[in-house]
Length: 265
Image 1 (cartoon, rainbow, N blue to C red):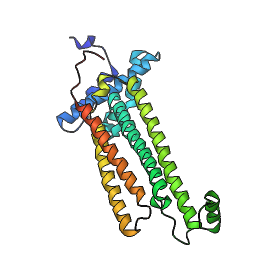
Image 2 (cartoon, one colour):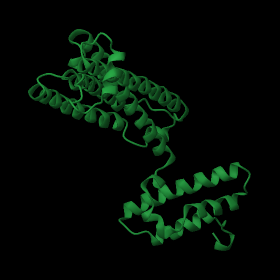
Image 3 (cartoon, rainbow, N blue to C red):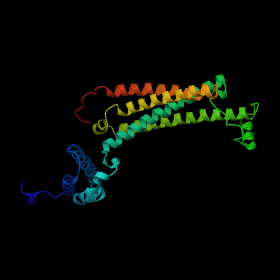
Image 4 (cartoon, rainbow, N blue to C red):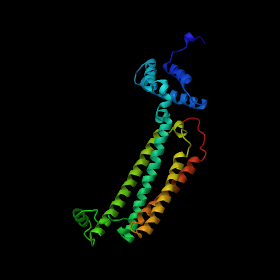
């Protein structure tokens, strides 16, 4: 083809310049060009859809992208494809939502522990001298059946623990609801395969296992140090984290199964 008849494209010119100026291994440069082209064409398409002429849209996309010399120093988030950004968002909502939901489960277990063994089983009072007479009066008003200030304080702390956990559970369910809505809206091959199918669930399951081990260790330490005061709190978290690890592991196994081939989204 005669070069004089080639269509002039600001994006193509910018990619050519990026190719000859980018440093690194060939594979890294190739990936850089793919990500850069996706970002540039997405921006240009959005501008063109708003009525900007194609040539001007491409030039503006290049201007927003910045000079090629800064490419290797750009934040990682700028190089993520739209599909990968959406997949990461869905993954964060999934793991965060499951975590919040199981913190709510911990709150429900804490309420059971409180009902059976009392507030002292899941809460520890402040040490003597760390609160004022006004604090003591407030706690006594909130728990008039308590025999003394320390007992009233423990009851208040136990109530706060259960309430905060249940609130986290509600927020977790909200996050899962938002994820379900976005997943339906972003249901494309580019999003589904931006990361390995079970990546977020595997990461969440590992984090849940570590949380279960850590909170179990805290519970054992509580038995040895405080002689059981507040010991229920770390153990209900350990139980909830163990359940979360099982749930996330099951989701990871399900996501890793081969999916039926679809010709198009």
